[in-house]
Length: 233
Image 1 (spheres, rainbow, N blue to C red):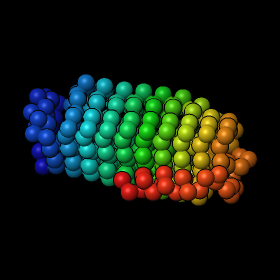
Image 2 (image 1 turned 180 degrees about the vertical axis):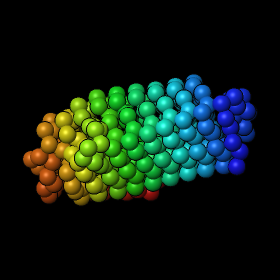
Image 3 (image 1 turned 135 degrees about the horizontal axis):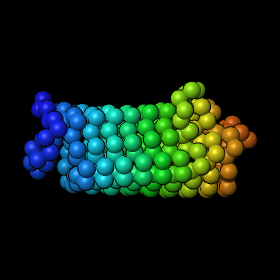
């Protein structure tokens, strides 16, 4: 394992040019405005670092840990996040587009005003997070969980807006969608405390105060076809 400290930004950039950045530990670094493109970052731990305006394009984040870092205005495009953790992270105004999050977690992190667009989230979890005034569009959440623990001081997706999004077999705890607007979305085989005081419009699968009730799909074949497509990825 290679260790990179405060004055090692140039060394990190040289290592990234190889296309695979593997088995490293980065601590107390300023990596602001770092761009990662067509790269693989794997089995790496990054902690106590400033990585604002960090952009990931056409890349893979695999078995990595981001711990107590500032990633304001972080963006990810056409990339995969696999078996990775974001814990104690500042993700304010982050952008997540055309990407896949698989077997990963976001824990005790601030995500105010973030944008999710054409995102696929599989077997992942959001725990004690705050994503106030965020936008979640055209996305699919499969076999994932969202939880707000009592006393954590976090507000989940409060005052956020969901559009054209599907939740399939997801678990909710602590009303993480409380105060959100949910438009043209579908909840299938979901359970738990989804949220009260939700502004619902053209949404299937939610009853009063976030309780799940069965509801038949208008076009079941098309829905199965769509879910099968994303399950295979």
